[in-house]
Length: 386
Image (cartoon, rainbow, N blue to C red):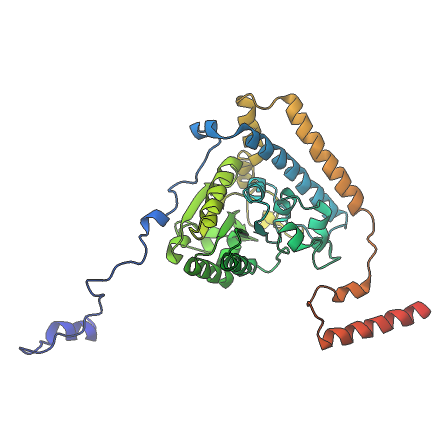
C-alpha cells in the first residue's frame, strides 16, 4: 500500500469539517455530443454482392466500371514510364482505384479535391489531363495544372499538410456563402501526422463542409497499421473530434461512392465534416524506390488480388446482365487509347525555361527572388554568348 492509499484509509475528517475535495465531475456534467450516432459501422460497408446493389443506378455502375478500367491502365502505364526514366517517381494506386474514382465522382463541379501525391488518378478521374497530373512527378514544374480552373489543389507530397488547407478553404467558402464542399484524401500513414489531428479538430469546431477520406492501404511505406494506432479503426478517431466516422470496403466502388456522396451532401447542407476510412490495399510497392518484399509476403498480396476492385465490379455487372464482352472490350479499348496518348506525350522531351523556376512561388516576388532571378538570367545570357 503506497503512502496515498495509507492517507486515504487512516486520516479521518473531524466532525463538521468541509469534506475533502474529490476529483470527480459535478452531477450536472454531460457530454457535449452523444457519441453513439458518430460511431462507424462494425464492419466495412459493402454494396457489391449484396441485395443493396439492386438499388444502384445502372448508369452509375457502368461509369464506375469504365473509370476503374481506365484507372488500372493509367497505373500500369505510369509505372512503365517510371521504369523508362520518364517519371522521377510514381506512387501507384493499383488496387485502390475504387477509392480514387469514387472520390472524384462524388463531387460536384464547384467542389474542391485536395489530393496527396498518391492521388493523381483521382485528379484524372475528375477530368484532369493525365500529363498535367503527372508533371509534378516528372520534376518539370511546381504543378502541371491550374488549381482554380480544375478545383483540384496541388498534389501534396508532405504527409497530411493538405488537410488543414482543405478545412481552411471549406470554412472560407461557408463564410462567403458559397455552396462548396472540400474532399481531402490521405493515407493511413498520414493519420499519424499532427496536421491530421489539427484539421479534424478545426473542421469539427467550425462545422466546416469538408470530407476526409482515409485510404487505409495497410502500410505507411513499410510500417503496418498496427504499429501506428491501437484504435478499433481509424474511423473511430472521428468520435474524439465530434464528427461521424464511416467505415467502408475501399475496393467496393459502389459502396465508397455511396458513403462519400452521403458525406458530401451532409456537409453541403450544413451538417459539418465526416471522416471516412476505406479499407483497401496497395498491390504495387509504395513507389518505384521501394522493395515491398522486405515487409510483406506474396501470399498477402495474392489474397488481396482476389478482392480486386476492377474484378469485383466486372463480376457484378456481368451477373446482372449489364456488361457483355462488347462492353468489356469497349472499356479496355478506351483505356488503351488513353495510355497510348499518355505514352506518346510523355516520351516527348519537354521544352523548359529555367526562368520559370521563379514563377508561381509568390503572387508578388520577394526581393530575394528578384535577386536570384536576375543572377540566373545573367548566367544564362553569359552561357549563351559563350
